[in-house]
Length: 371
Image 1 (cartoon, helix red, strand yellow):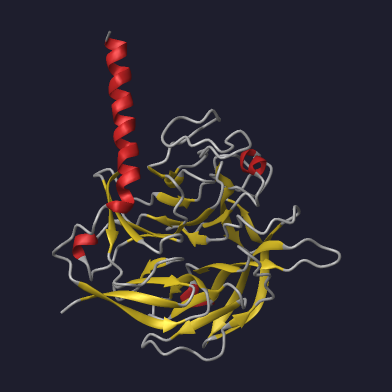
Image 2 (cartoon, rainbow, N blue to C red; image 1 turned 180 degrees about the horizontal axis):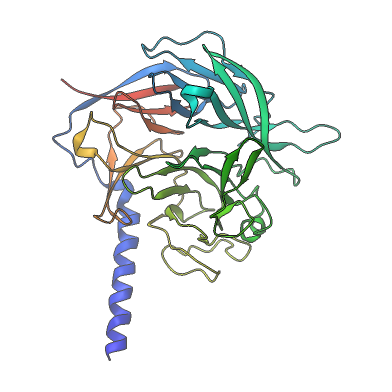
């Protein structure tokens, strides 16, 4: 009887989590005391990823043109691109993630992910490229990593990259449309990788969970973006499911997040998936909403939102806000942020001014405290 009681309590807990996920999109903004307005920051041509420099300048990638663009700290756009890379922008390919080097102030290095077009002799590939920026001009692009797309698929590129507090570089790649790759530890797609940056280039971080491998976490279908918690260093990823099970995941070293050839069209939600090292989602949403940019707010403009987890949803253009528990490892509530007629369909980040910046294919917007 005791075992049966534990079973039913566990089932009730799982049901409550599923109820939270199902109702997440319906909850209204709960912070009646937070007054703000939304304004267009600038018109943009399909911006994908936003990255602020310490001096307040904004760098962003353009998916379709292969250009990195620059906006001055006063909001004035630079007319000429910082750099333009040859880029295949079909479907989900393009110029994708961007990150400034931890020593950017000294070396001017900017890191991006772009899809290099294929040739008659070589496959297209998602590449990590590092270039040097000085006074708004980029030079000396160096290919640091190249992951060929050998199956002709145009989707599930992932393609974001961020540095942690120790200066290690993390890069996400989707499964390239082949679920089996996500469970294959010898393949790059379907994973988040962690690298040590050396003078010779990128090497697997010495404390990675699989010795000699760059794999940090696997079993991922298409983690378009991920973010670090500035309070704990925890890593959160936004995962895109097939027809269901869009997820917010707490990414742990060596964690397996379930996607693979046996997943099929099943909707597991919070139920266990029969794979090694399985890690359940913090939040599962069905049907899919298209999880894209994700961040933890650490600015000073909205104290009531400090430490909350935000993400954008491609399908609806919604911006969601999740409250974390005291351990910062569980989601306790999810709310919708009223964007006042605008849409957050790609990325969201905190500016050095403490404002919240977000993007859709037509422009970049920001949330400002109301007087």
